[in-house]
Length: 82
Image (cartoon, rainbow, N blue to C red; front, side, top):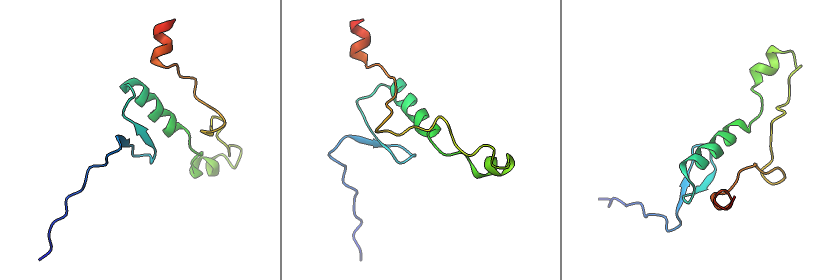
């Protein structure tokens, strides 16, 4: 007879988003929603669009690399100071 294993809670407080990225819990809901929207937007153009336009549209001009191009988001502390 096999004993049922319980999942241990992770000691690190991190929530997992469906897009495959990790986000910390210390964000406001508005910031989390904005980051989630930007993660969804940061993807390639679907193949059916490339086929439908006869390869006139092949690249997503809004594509962003997380290391080289940062999002223009103000932190809560900066907003309070100004």
